Image (cartoon, rainbow, N blue to C red):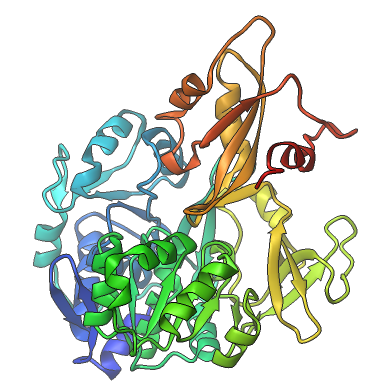
Length: 511
């Protein structure tokens, strides 16, 4: 069972129904028109550029309909969509591109300069220019796709385990890992979300988060287009404009992250916005402060849910009813329909009792196939069919789960994962730094920001400004710590690990 026919089957059933509204261009696409675009993209890539099953195609661009062209078109070829996080630096992106080795790289105009910096270190066969991006030797994506035939491409042999997408997540070793999302995972995420969240063909949802993220692609976009609903796509996030679009397009289900909800709440337009068509709001990306949920409800009423997911597990892992979302504020709900969950002691692997914290393990058809060319990381994360999330959760007597922390050394800033090892590695590259440890400091706007504790080498000197400047160009902006403090030494366990609990006690006592 594969997912290559998700869009073509929907276009066959409801060809004239409106599927996508692209806010930046004002274009409105029916299912038939959206499917024809995906077919043209697939036929062009196959006929002109020789893209074959298993080949990767990457996209470095802001949100547009082109993401859907490639997401659905490549699946029909058995090729793999590998979108790139445009928030990363050229150095970080170069590693990812050389790891996944795309046959084709499509680039938008805002990132032509970044690509130019990367190209001497890349060996990509074909470059495509989007929106007339100045890329030497590149073909025009729009011109080439417009000339390609719109018939369905011939399907190669496809199975549930055929890779569909390759999405990179930052690794605890300091190197990003490519999560392999097979056709099976994409299909079952659609099924699980529609069943567990009660989505229908009448639902309309905005996508204001980046489509290089699993959340942008799979939280609402693919499930809603699967069931026959409508997506309202923003090129990027602008608080008031996106709120006005939610109202104007009569959106019914809305996903955000804590930072977005706070920015929406702060806009002057929020007070007058009419949200009567919204069935529910749902937060994802990171835990949202309960006071923010309560402030939103007090101002606007309605249903506000807390979600939980991750790239490797299909992004939508829990659900709850409207009534439960109020009664169990702060909980992410119960496991989705086709899924199994366990909470275990991370040291012993034994189940923990209700109310006790344990590492969240997930098993089901919506779990990824592992990590690209990384058997060690795959073996560590996937054991006997269970995906070890590294997140700590509690389950109450009613079966509701609450995410309470992370066993893995990671913080979330504005919905973005920031892995400590990657940031610490950059700091240790500075000539004056002997050691460094990153911890998360609570922040009203971003949820968490990085606080780096640094030990300098004997006889060396460096200030906070110098070390933060050193990170520029080496780390994406959201990964750079907001604060640097200096210490004579770091606390270590008998096993040589930095005891970050002690650092948090020392430096975050006033938070």
